[in-house]
Image (cartoon, rainbow, N blue to C red; front, top):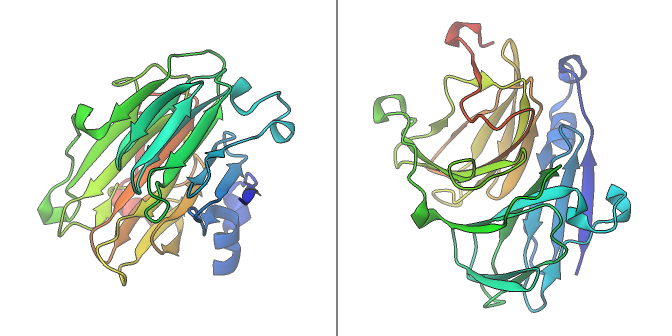
Length: 281
């Protein structure tokens, strides 16, 4: 088993004005999220979000972070969310086992000492996309199935942005400190997400793109201030983090899905500053 955690540092808008493509990718892209048998994480200094992939195969996997965070155990002062996008899995949260099929999610409250991830079939492993944020209060852990969520349905076919938004870790489902996490599915024939673009200065966000229409589909993620935009091309199952001052909008050459994770000042999902289309540059 390999455990890796990469650190991404905080940036001001001025920092990235002259970044090359390679520099932009190094600072904001998580190129590998899921590797069978491994845990791969990114720790961004933007609101101290930790995100990444846990992919168990023949052996159970557990995120063990203590010295890195200055605590006795990983969730001593953090909360955790995860969604399975792979094969059938099992998760054990402080001794309580739960089956985790594809699209099942889970919220794990602060103070939980043990979260163990397993796959039912090592040849078709579960892929747990995880996100963790600092917390100050313990709320009950809860499994969340996509069948229990009434999705938001913004957009329309005429503007190529028809989609379903499933809010997993959100006040609609669970009590949380600051973490939010959800699953957005683009309708066939739609390609834009979150356009018109927006920023939310009170929290940052990370996106993980997957379930591409075919092997040649590519997504383009837009980042930067509204008047100084840049872009990153993504292959399936790659993730990108956005500072709070940055837009975070995407388009692809075919249909796709993404998981968003947010943390910061508040948990009001629609607290955002819409960017006028004429201000984008």
